[in-house]
Length: 524
Image 1: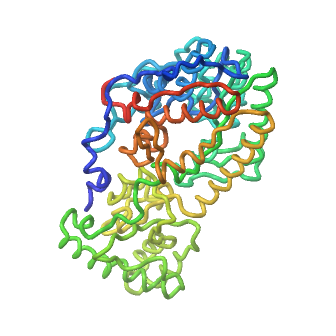
Image 2: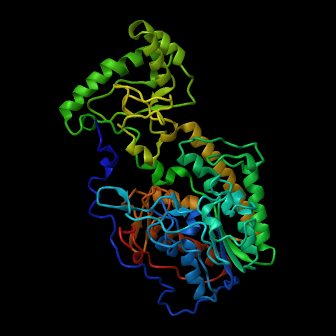
């Protein structure tokens, strides 16, 4: 019905995916002639701890050029001009992205914008997890790492990769199978560190559409699943331990708090109400109006009538031919009216069909502006549910075979208000811990929550460029909708440098954002 919907919002974007295909040029300082100074800090031995942002993850993968442009690599280049030492990164083997484990692909290649939408680059990953790279490494950013993973022994043991007990990115460069990320940092006796961690403690729950468990109240992270929300007390305890150990010998550092997930294009690109008559008619207004009339008569009307009888009529409204309509979604926080709907439909549909309708629509409603539809859902809208992703163990027959239109989008497709609230409460708690500990230890602090909010609202002007969180064209984010673009990483690095200067009296100058790409091209 609407097979081209997934890039409906991007049809006019082919002209401006990337405005600079040249290599990024690192600018160490400005031309004001003032000598650079580290102030009260010492950058002679800098180590960076964190997750995929520190690693330079971009466009859904980790690859060389992305790693070179990570905010911590940019920081190290600026530190070098003020007495900083060497900074070693565990580079991957190519610019294709992805990982191999025993020759088998376990992580996919990076995306690029082909003028219509993001697509995978051609090629096969060549970065083999079993092939260790020799450190020690200053950049200890590990994609996928949560706070407690930084102190987890065996997180870099390749034997545990397939079971999920270990991280394949850390397994490539961990000094020993039983070490921790923190231990590999401390053994280098850093004089300065950066720490930006905690995003994944809520992000994996959010990006999965809330498929996970809010572990608030559970103090044992060994029992957590991959998509669970970390208990705030666990986070605070781990974070305090990290900072206490890193500063024990007098090292100074910079830390950052966490943004709200609703500032990321992963959650803001796909609208909750894309179903216009033209869209439902595959470009034809007349066909769309006829389709809406049929849907109202055969599905939405009967559902609305039945739900109204059970005091839940607000869940469904008839489709309009003049305005954009919201999609059908499943909301597991709603009272399940499957039994009631089954009873209501049995006289007209028969027991078996009525039971099927009841199971499908018992917790269905139309989406509202308070729901966040995740980026991957754009390829599901209008597509036929399968036995795997229908939520009922079978592929539904026509006419209930169009996600978002005649069949509810499932939990993994949408972050509903109760889930958004859980993420926000945890994020706020983490941020209180981060700021409190940073202040207690006298560390530089970067308020990325404010920065990301500005990107998603007013935009940020720097070096005559306006960066926003708008997907593809905003300049700040890569094609995975979560991780920064090259220019976005440069912006983050400059914000870190501003905080360092303010805290330690250094005069690091930052980089010119104009020298960094908006997006990576197909070939690197």
